[in-house]
Image 1 (cartoon, one colour):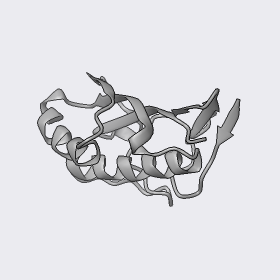
Image 2 (tube, one colour; image 1 turned 30 degrees about the vertical axis):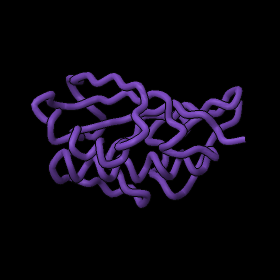
Image 3 (cartoon, helix red, strand yellow; image 1 turned 180 degrees about the vertical axis):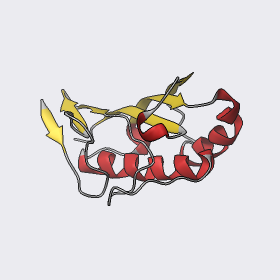
Image 4 (cartoon, one colour; image 1 turned 60 degrees about the vertical axis):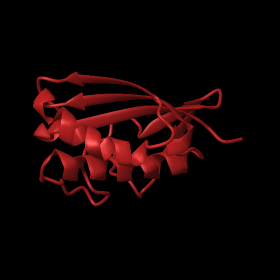
Length: 125
């Protein structure tokens, strides 16, 4: 197993890594709308989702992967009523390539954010 770390995404806020590579597969920790400097994006779900994708792109790049190599996403929404707005942004990042996805409403997310996303991706060889 290989830990993945980048300063281009927020540092872990607990005892975990930004991601792990095992057998050419990258497993990310959930990304929330924190900027790399640790400040929180507090706008609506669309603004928060854009920040989450910036974080995901950074950790994927550090793992030698990309959004195009993502095979599965898991999405946690604070409020399922935000699904349509969230999905509008999500579709901007996965327009042609559409990985498998789960989306659930969570009772509470870290720092009370509106969205958290984790990914599983193939690592480029």
